[in-house]
Image 1 (cartoon, rainbow, N blue to C red):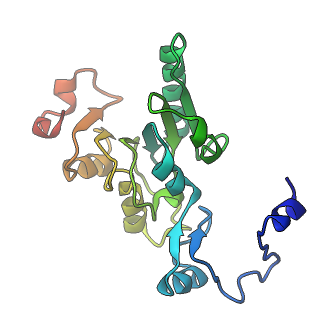
Image 2: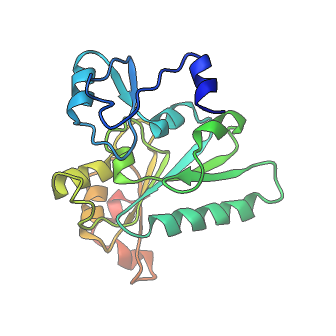
Length: 217
């Protein structure tokens, strides 16, 4: 479908270099991950009653199946891809399906209608995507957090806060965190969720979490 098709359906396009010069007059704003949520035009629209959302947040709201959300400064694409492949192998002789998307691959929102409650969606999430989200995946994974994207985020604290959104809202039931990373370990220790820690240096779970086993499930 092209520009004319959507126009005929009632869509209004405001394009060009100065497309925001007259502000945003909308009830709902779906923010592209590349736009900061505190952009003046977005902030003004929200103050005037607009609801700020995103494609990914809408997917979380309507998705009927369990969502595994994976974020991190490094390794999230590899972890997301491998998790999806493992699930595909697990489901190969069943009527269940494993979907993959988010910050990689094709958008998942158009596929939500075909998903069932028996399926699993594996979603890679960037800090840009989850910074303003008010829902979390059922299973949240943080591979690590190190200084990253600080040319976009105002500082390291904002970056860490954005990453924490993956496990702080409704929907979250479990957090998987890196025991070897100081920031992810601290996030996990301050979370009320059941925690599973992993380590790239130790093979025994008793070695991985000797000081905070009581927070692990």
